[in-house]
Image (tube, rainbow, N blue to C red; front, side, top):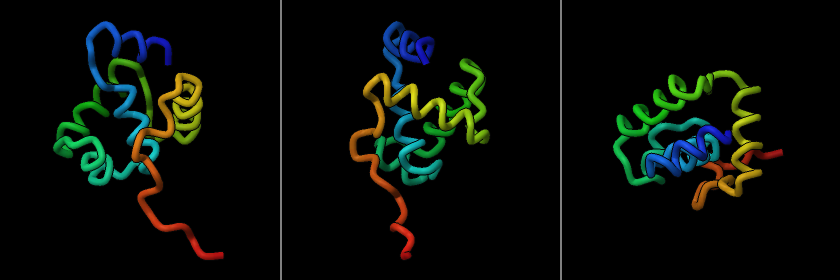
Length: 91
């Protein structure tokens, strides 16, 4: 996570907040794109950059958990406005 945060600071990119929003929306591309105010293809491009540049396999639940914990430690999770995108399950 340090590499990602350093990359964002050096290049003034938004990859860490993008990842936080994506995780807080349970991987819902359309909802995350709306939250970030970007086109869904822009979001997909950012997710590809996260995968290729930082080796994040966002299909792996362990990787998602570790990413969420790293973002929490950095104070970036949950993302602002990043509440659940689906209603709670009834008991």
